[in-house]
Image (cartoon, rainbow, N blue to C red; front, side, top):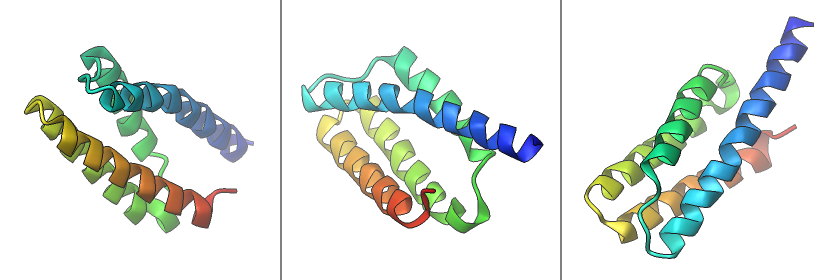
Length: 103
């Protein structure tokens, strides 16, 4: 039962990250720096979600995190183009991971 409850909480956490990511994507596509509060909330969720990473997809998750971290560095430097590129890379990694591992 604990395993099932844990998976449910993981899915809820993942679903809570999605709207923040989409909002940041819309802002970047509009040429606007994402809201720092959104970023902080998103990063907190990433750190929590990292604890739930399954061994079979942990390497892809780490690649994704590295792209998200690079995106954040680009944002701090006001480099919207680089931030967009890193976001697209993170999206591609996520899509490939979901295609392979999503249940």
